[in-house]
Image (cartoon, rainbow, N blue to C red):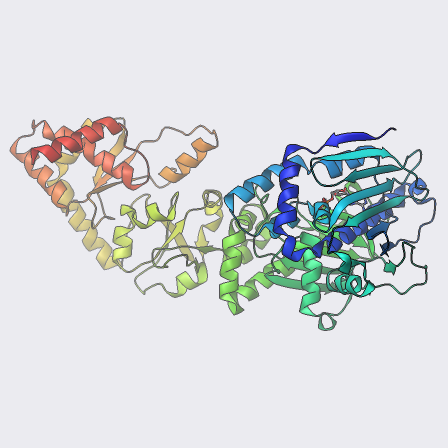
Length: 626
Ligand code: ADP
């Protein structure tokens, strides 16, 4: 192949410029990125070699060499991993996975000036960090397997890269950095050793240093200890070591919120090192999201993002699992129904749930952070994982009428704070917290000093059935059915009062019902209002307004189910209407007022009035008439 020049895809150039400029103060991370890529390439070769012997026909001793040449001012990172074909190079080094690039540019826009180094790691653009220290980067690679040809990729990081045939007899990849002026520090063994120790000590293959452009001897002392952290006792590992490993694994720039080492012996034996991150990646809710843990079998890397090891609703958990109870030549398909895998999964699930419960008890602020970041995902478990339903119920938090700011409350704390007179747990499903807080539906309940949970996540509508009760206390929607509050005595007193008022207001409510026919199913006096004049409620088993909107947004047909308009007989407006009706039942203003009442009730629950123009005209009319 003659030398061919290619232009970087447009976004790549942008990303490149960004990487070079924004990471400049942390330029040494390029070494970590290249070593990490080399280690991944060996993982892949080792795994493919399990089933395809041709790939490991040379019986390789896996290794990563870092070779400096002070005269040429070059630094090389060599591995004998999987290698890349011309096509691989074009695909991997000429573009960033296009979904990633888009999300990356989007995240940059949203987080204006935010932590760019963090984003870079997260979006898999590590290779490009080499351009921070190198004026030219050359990659020479020979892919493992039969019939492959060596290829050279080269670029100065300004717009184009070239691809041409190369000479390389052993499979693997060499990345050659022609260092920029002032970067000579990276040619010294001391500096390289320091970086490897700091960021790459746990890499499972020996990383050795060579000078004068020569590969280190096979028996040269590696720079890293190669100790698989998950195999070491927790007491032997420093917190920084866990953090470095986490960074290697996730590219997250923040330390994990919680590190969970697991060692299980007995029926199944495995070790795991699990992490709960502080924040979710950009793809947590995307359909093609990755989730799962990296799986090792007796130290051999089997696969990344192994989704059989964790339920979907714990997809925020990162980490590795190493088991000696699985066969080495396994494929994902074979493991689908594997009993050992199922046991590991249920064990890890239990461990994560108990860790979260502990965190909730011992470090509530951390738990609040966790729940704010991942609560929505965790809640999916209530729908799917019935077995752990009670544990999950204990873990969910909600904002409530009594919590302030971004505070959240658990069922347990809610129940503990219930006044004697309160029997049920009250909740309101709503699109957002602001609408919920101002909702007329909570007036009477809150007025009695009872708290109301606000269910404002779209997923809440799906799990509400699973939440039917907590600790023997029924969950009751404040905007549905007949709301009965207080002691039996109070209830019967309230009922009598309401019945008396109902007779008094009967003609008016009949009139409004007739006028709003088709829009509401019923007009009643309300037990739940204290300040507002009116509100709309659903019957006990119907969907409320927020759930209706959610279903429409998902293109589902929503049954036509007009709701009940409730009026507050203690409100001056309703009293005035009653007097107007008594004075002249044919007063045309009554029909306008009825329309206004309905509009108000719709606005209060976050829906637009049925006919916004008419609603505005009526209000304007009222304003001029005064
Ligand atoms: P990431 O490693 O996060 O995917 P990079 O930009 O660092 O992103 O690398 C892009 C891709 O290039 C890798 O996913 C891999 O397929 C390929 N690659 C990089 N370095 C090597 C290497 N030493 N050997 C084989 N493939 C490599």
